[in-house]
Image 1: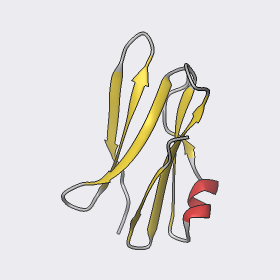
Image 2: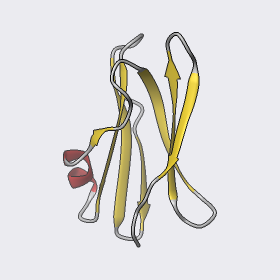
Image 3: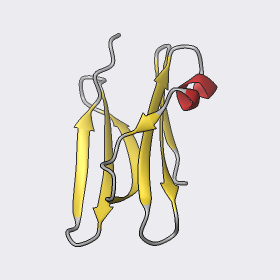
Image 4: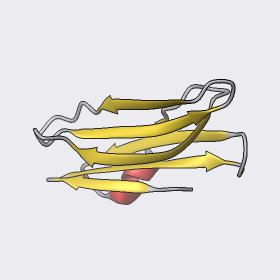
Length: 88
């Protein structure tokens, strides 16, 4: 499952992976200002369909903006990352 979460003021952010142990990983991301359970309930899939996406992590950037990074495996290996647009 590889969950990772962060709290930035009133904002809760969570990411996790779902799938099997080998070839079918999907990365999910959710956020909420009312708590972790709402962040999970309102999460959506962030990775592309058919890609084996794994091990998402959250980090805070220098300016306090949250970032997400995860690995992709298959015919091509890669790392995806993105700054998350989270209003203060």
